[in-house]
Image 1 (cartoon, rainbow, N blue to C red):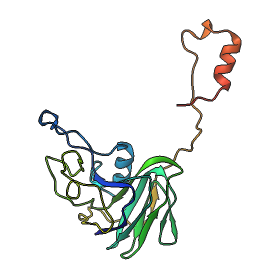
Image 2: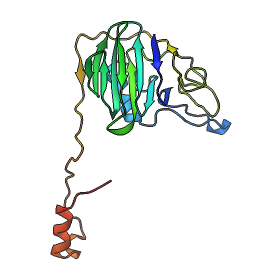
Image 3: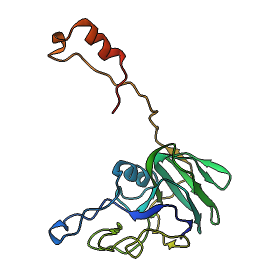
Image 4: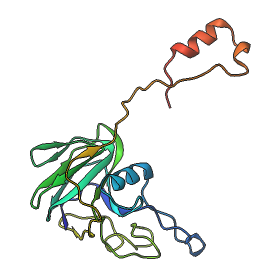
Length: 200
């Protein structure tokens, strides 16, 4: 079990989404940052779209009530497992009774906490994700609150070491090649293109 000591501003159970229900007026929902959900799940041996916690803007305190492996991905936030730093994008072990505390992210908004075995809430219309509009999925169709407890599924794999994925630093260089119209620009414009930072 996971116990939400402090649930934060907006935390919910999400997975890959509820597909094939739009004709009934039910939206896809699911994780807003699916690549982060998938990475977290794969790090702990879950199916790519297994249910995990989606945490908006950190500020949570989660107690592990059993030994388990977990991975935190998404927003770059300072996280501590008791007094030990937790690296975003890494699989780590937690012992029963330990607390995972997330602070407000330095950048990014949503963090994903996947636990080996996944979050075991009922499947509703093919998904475990929370849909607040309809009030289904997740834990009673609502966002998580202080004191909530979440059951964990059975882990399909055993791990012996922590492992992570490489985090790309902000400010990466983007490679480019001159295109067919490159010669249409004067030298000053060409030079400015190669020297100027690109903001996306």
